[in-house]
Image (cartoon, rainbow, N blue to C red; front, side, top):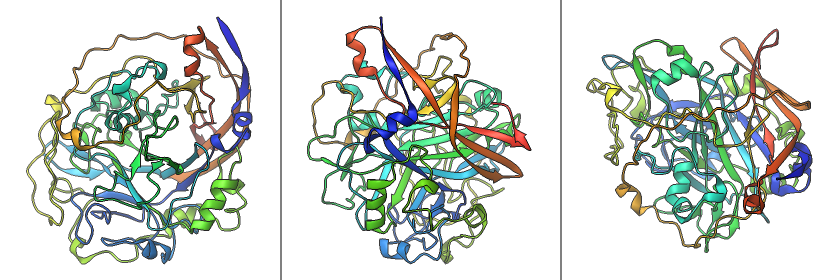
Length: 496
């Protein structure tokens, strides 16, 4: 058995831009509405979205529209991009629905992985995920990266594993990012997720170098072989920043109440979670940030291109809202309480591919939502498959570690609708030794306030030692680019 000399997370970042990042806090929603100018342009979208970013957002938004936004709900005043995902709702027995509160808005990570990164071009837009999926076809838990075979590196498989539903409990050892790829059951959330569910999604970062969008809004992009790192497929050789969204939903507000959590697209499984991005950056500013914003803290305050134009928490949370709400949505009540999901969206459990939703539909009286009792989802009772350092949740941005040998074929999304449901087997519980926090210095912190509670994000510099069993496992060695953990503060920093 051999040990690799430890490197601090910060030192690893300083080795070059390949491991650098910044995170863009977008602490306020500009809207909770049925709007999606990418998938459903010029009409009301089929389902509601939690929308963050530039205020000049509507059913037919373009790059130029976003650049003309009066404000943004994100921290950097000139990031007029639009970021949106489905919203999470709680369905009470009988079908009454209401929005689950967000905590801290959302975070958009810009991970600078790969060589010769290019800024998103003018007019660029993309999707991640598949709204109609209702099953996960991979192994549970994830196989170690070194054991991935060709079936694990298809674009469908990488997309499925790009999702995460992190069960937050700050009194326990944190789960790693993208640890689970399906929503836990309501019972599991009540018993284990005292601080909510953190929904996570990684966007593809390999671009074909020519199209700012395509008919399906996906096929101009592809995932690299390791989702967030590795090699790009042939024909997708241009690397763009790797976008990673985090949104925390306060599921604990419904602890003990009978009902279920459902995403606004009618998905109780989480497998249909998705994200949309429409570029609203000044391209020169973004390229300069990609080149220069390599501070290991990841804070926008520590980037020379951002520091002189930052929104306050109040400006992000309270002062930036959508400029013009389309009249077709004036009767919608997406926040609830309402008699069903906004847009009359039915709940579709799967495991088969969900029927398409109808864009442009108005409000009405949807039928009561059925019970969740027939839904079977894998319950993960084993140790996290994603990385973990001294009890602190890690988003690990890898170096160019060797990936499994696979063919570099162009991605194909057409086969998703025919994907079979995976066989669900009970996972054996894995017991792991408790870990004490290693000595490490906090190199930066930032705070946000929600519902009277102050939350602090602490970025720690921690020495990491990686142990390798033998030479065959060298491909599993990954440097940890940043650590993140949200801790509660009531006057003094609370429990970790």
